Structures are given as structure tokens and as C-alpha cells.
Length: 284
Image (cartoon, rainbow, N blue to C red; front, side, top):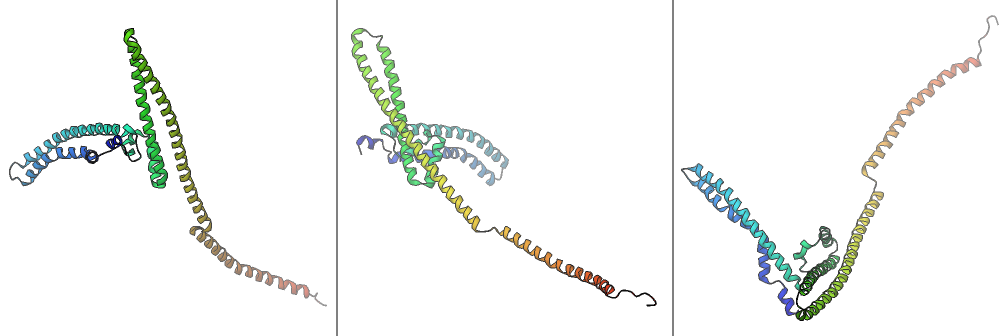
């Protein structure tokens, strides 16, 4: 690791400061708000005379210290933002790495942060590649912004050099034109790298989406297969109930059918006897 890179890495003191500043607004608010009201509240429970005054003092001090604590917490919050911005400038001086990406999450879009969280849960290897590509994108965007700012300064100096006398203007304009050409070359190279990084980000996002959709599709197919193989309990019970009802109806239908057949037989037997033995006329 080069000496410059070693200087731009975070030190132990900076890590400790970052951890303290992360919770410092809340801590400052409570430390400035609670002690004085807590003292008056303690006196309210322990005092034997003028008890109501201590409660009034506790409520009044709570209101004033809360306002003061809010202002102090807001000031600490602003200082934390300023400190983190300086830290990001230091870390990005020679390029942002994947390990330092957590300090640059504010420069990512909401979709990129959500995609990174999903990749961390589903595919850690792909998440590492996505994190490195995001770090490279942040580096390219910062270099591009810095190059454009320097190019604007060079153009402004060229316009200012045009007002100088002819004796001292030539050498200055030549140097400024060299700077402009150099910045234009750097800007062109960085723009090309930026486009390549954007394409790589889209490829990784497409792969992550494909893996996620494929996993969801496989899970859905497994569930469909289990549904096809296993008949639902409600459907099976409904079929059994229907079969039992049909059996009962058949059993109830059999006696009525046999009884009707007997009645028909009883009615037809006298008719048959009447045909076999016709009535005789008297006197025959």
C-alpha cells in the first residue's frame, strides 16, 4: 500500500469519533434535558415542605432544558454531517473502495440501496461485485465533477488572461491551454469509464433480478406440484360427504320401489283370475 493511500485510510481515532458522533445528538439531548428536572423531581418526592414548588420547578426546567437540548443536538448533528463530508473527501482522494462504501450511501439512489440490501440477503458474492462497482461509480462521478470544476476555473483564467498585456499573456495562455487540453482528456477518459461502470451495474442488477425471479418461479412450481399431488382436505371431505349422501338416498329409495312393485302385483292378480274364470250366465 502506498504512503498516500495509507494516509487516506481511516485511523482508529476516526473510527471512534464516527461511532461517538453517530449517537451523540441523542446523548447530548438527554444529558442536557434530564438532570435538572430529575433533581427537582427527586426533591418533590423527598421534601416535606413546599412540595408543589418542586413539581413546578421540575416541569419548568424540563421545558427550558428540552429546548436547549434540541438546539445542542441539532448543532452536534450539523457538526457530524460536516465531519462526515470531510471524511468522505479524504477517503475519495485516491478512489473509493468497497469497504468504504458505507460512508457514501447518501450518494446512492434509493433503488441502488434497496438492490444492495436484497443482494446481501440472497447472493453475497454478487453483492460484493455490486458493491465494488458502486464504489467505482462514485469514484468516477467525483473525478468527473472535480475535472469539470477545474475546467471551469481554467476557462475563467483564460478569459482573465485576455485582459493582460501582450508581453505577459502569451506564456500564461499557453499553460492554461495545456491545462484545458489535459482536463479535456481526463474528462473524456472518465466519461468512458463511467459509461462502462453504468453498463456493468445494469448487468449485475439484471442478473440479480433474474436469480430472484428464477428462485421465486421454482418455489411457485414446487408449490403447484404439491397442490397437484396432495388433494386438499376440504375437497376430500366434501367428496366423501357427497358419496355418503348418495348411498343414503339409494338405501331410502329401495323399500319404496319394492312396495310399489308389490301393490302392482296385488292389483294384477285378481284381473288374471277374472280372465281365467269368466262369469257364467244364470240358467246355464
